Length: 501
Image (tube, rainbow, N blue to C red; front, side, top):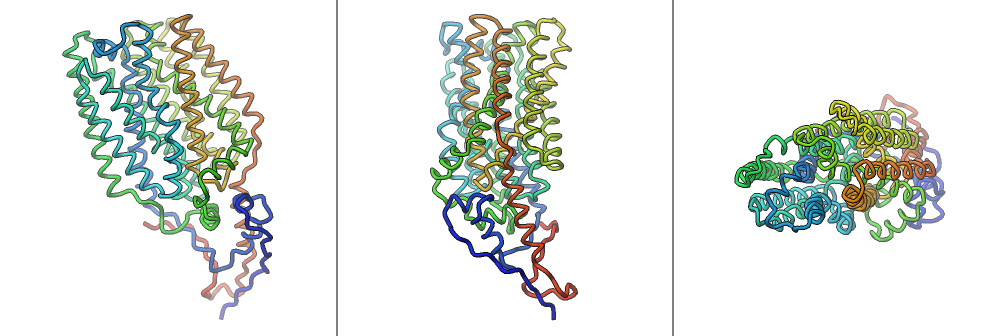
């Protein structure tokens, strides 16, 4: 008969919450060493993970599309809804800007209950709630297609903005729950990729559907076609997620996820978790710098119509194509960054490099606008997008690494809340500078903000706690010796990477 021998376990000296959630603590090391054979389960990755990730990507895509599909044709929206907008030019433009900023405003207070719901109820409840709100907002927009109903359009956009709180915090959590340790960064990048593709479609499609005819009746028909198409897609996505989206796989896909489950991840008081995160100085600093970079991206996207048309009047269609270029190149940046992180695990240096090159891209975009060569703008916008939007999943994964095993939804939720705050501040600031000074001055202010963010990022400590947790369990597993491997006993440890449905 096979005989299994293990090294003696070391007793834990304390079980406080702080120690339990810290991979560096003696307590957690002791608890890891106490994992006996009956507690070490097989590690599987399930084929269904790709279905779950695909459904989420399409949901994220549809919500991101609705974020920007009105502001990319802001001048046409102003013309159509002129009867229900303020008479002052600045106030009228700012009202249309709020169609984008309402996404950011809704996120800031609501992310806290949304994160609590994700920690307690899991991914399925979050996705069902989000797709339902996304669908309701889309149908309300169909009713708002009338020049005197800008107020209803704003309500509909607000509902879609509320749905966003069930999108932005999900990618790192979904990756951790469903994907193995060598896939999490790539899965996070793909989750962010869905959002970026939605923004790309939001840049590209509306200028094609809605023509700048100046005739209110024709604009209304074009808007109705766009709104009803969006409503149909979001309804189908809601039904698909209702049927096909699962909360979690039957077994944890990684040692880190297994340790997190055994540590009682998500069972602590939510406010205690928030307090622990904010006490983590490196995470707090990363949260601020992430907000500055992503907030810059939000402001540029919101005001892209204004910025480009100031230099290239009449280039309405090209504005959407420039936005598409920013996002498509950013998708490439996200995927490359995710694959690089999975291969090298160099989170801080990659974050710094992406931040530095984002600054370089913004400087290039700022100083090439007045060259009066539209093809140059496409190139500089592509460079900006590759690094600025490619930075998004890198920041997420860096945050998860330095805060493990805190819930991914909570840490990413705070990161996104920071981005929304800076997004609102930068958008209003850029709009004010554009009206009182120039587009060049507004873009230059974003360059300065990115420079400050880059300097602050240098002070974030690279304490990779998730990697340490993985190593601790691997070390424990190597202490389990199978003396007669030809016979598998009941208590044998089995770690496999099988792929089952």
